[in-house]
Amino acid sequence: MDLKLFERVDSGKGLFAVETVSLIYNALTTILILVLFPRMDHPGMMLLERLGIVALTFALIFMYQAFPCRLTAFIRMAVQMSLLAYWYPDTFEFNRLFPNLDHWFATAEQWLFHSQPAVEFSKNCPSMWFSEPFNMGYFCYYPMILVVTVYYFLFRFEWFEKVSCVLVTSFFIYYFIYVFVPVAGPQFYFPAIGMDNVMAQHFPAIGDYFNHNDYLIPGPGFEHGFFYQLVEASQEVGERPTAAFPSSHVGISTIVMIMAWRVNKKLAYVLAPFYILLCGATVYIQAHYLIDAIVGFVSAFFVYSLSTWMYKRWFISPVFRQVMEREWAE
Image (cartoon, rainbow, N blue to C red; front, side, top):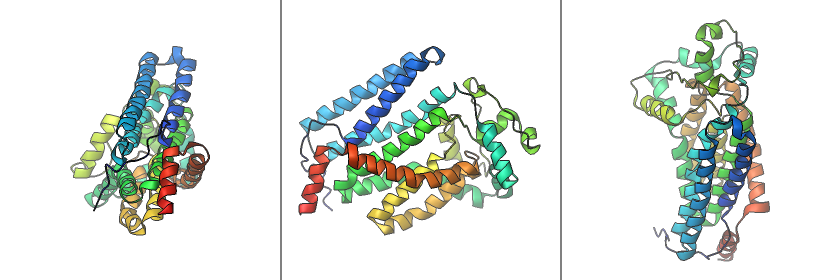
């Protein structure tokens, strides 16, 4: 198979769509930092980090203009996607300043389901035969994104910018919600109020508790499992008491499945078991309330449509417009 990594792509001076979206989100959160500056923990460092991301973005543009090929185009977009690992915990630096809303969601969960599904699910299915598949599904979140985006890069390059832009835009839509909707999820909220309160169906407000506390309980399930340990390690490194509602794990993975289905139905069938396990795992490992997962699924279709419309209307780059026109002409 000819990967065409060094096939020349027309060199344009403009931004790729994913870079435009990233810079817009960067600018919006920079304004928010300036507004909240006196209340934030380390606003100066956050501003410097944003400046560094801008500098990196333009350094990659200069690299691409010097060597305009598929590989350097991939590097430009892949770097912006990898920076999502920075932008995710960054949401916590904002929403930690606002009163926590978990008590509303736990109360709604109790009213709707007459229980706490995040507690009952793992409690009734504690064995390795449930724990390991669900943890495997949860761990496959980023690999699923990687597989689909690389597939587009290799086999449908003309759509690669669109896929990258829609994914990053979708992430940023969810992240912007997280900035202003401070919900931490059961794995943070339940230890904060104590399991006695949870069992008594008493869900008190905790105000800005997470501004000073970020204790994360170990996940339920088979503690000696391979995938259990992988998920625990990733949680310890990158998890914060933020981003529970709606579940971006469910939302983004649903968008990834839509993309897989559109490009290759066999690929979608291969990913489907991992997707189902991932969605179930969000509640099983107590990262989310069941409400979060449901709204994450429903919202995915709206977010995908909105992100696609924004790409076509505002963000498509001249370079990839030419690539698409050339592919269609052939």
